Length: 137
Image (cartoon, rainbow, N blue to C red; front, top):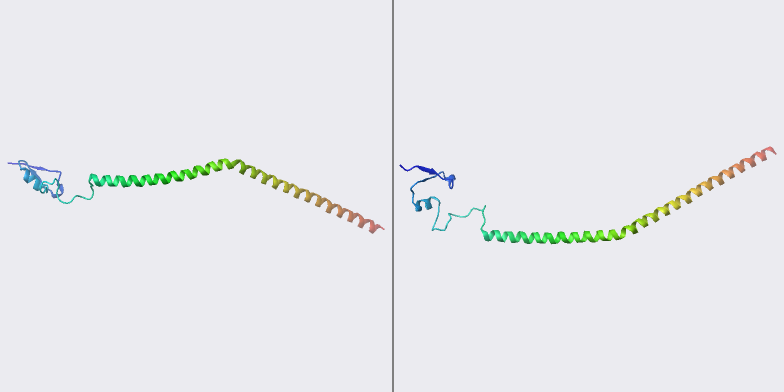
C-alpha cells in the first residue's frame, strides 16, 4: 500500500502527493504546463529581476534628485550663516549705538525735568514771598 505524504506547496488545494507518482503526475498536480517552469499567471506579490532593476534605477534617480535638492538647500543655509558671521559685529555695534542714543535722550529728559521742577518751584516760592510782602504793606 502506498502512503500519502502531505505537501506544503499547494496546501490551499488540500492535496497529497503519493509516493511512487511519476513526474508527469507531479507536474500536472503542480499545474506545470509545457515545461515552462511555472503554472498560470504570476502572483502580483513577486517581480522579475528586470522589473526589480527598473524599479531600483527609478528609485535611485529620485534619491539623487532629492540629494541634489538637499545639497542646494544646505548651500543656501551655509551662505546665510557665513553672511551672518560677517555681519554680527556690525549688528552688535548698531545695537550699542542705539542704546547709547536712548540713554543720552533719557539723560536730556531727566535734566529738563529737574530744571523745570526747580524753576517752577522757584517761581512759586518767589510768588509766595511777594504775596506775603504785598499783604504786609
